[in-house]
Length: 179
Image 1 (cartoon, one colour):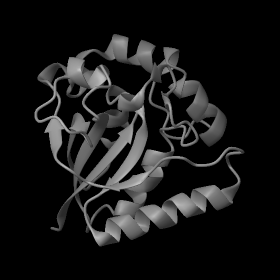
Image 2 (tube, rainbow, N blue to C red):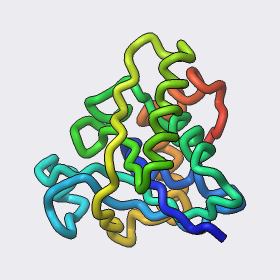
Image 3 (tube, rainbow, N blue to C red):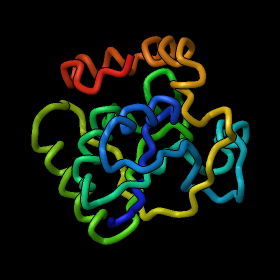
Image 4 (cartoon, rainbow, N blue to C red):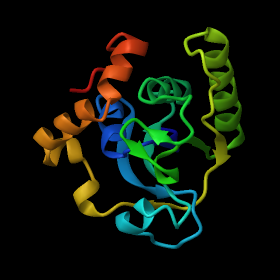
């Protein structure tokens, strides 16, 4: 087993956990915060846009069973990679998108994946999702973990009401439909 970590910011972390859960080789997924300057930030602090952190997910996976390139494919299909101001209903720096690489292989794969998306012509606007070196990841408070399971009705309403579902349906044909 080749256990690795992958970290992605895609707006609201509630909506970024479920798409990765049903694959063999995915060991664990945590919602949390990364990329900022404050140690052990809270949800309230991160949402204030004063810590520099983004809401993110950190995925522990077996690279022999599930390659990083497939994680990238799933990630792109959950976000609007042309929006630097947040994602869907959620606005602000804490809701921006980013790929946080943990090693050189991930960095190169992320760059190639982003380039392929840019060249695909799928989006008319530039792809603005940055690729950044991973920093400390702080798991979010327990009430934010597996939110789609612990609060399924609110999760579904939020996923649809935020505009994420409609965007995914429009740009990816309902692929990875989550609610």
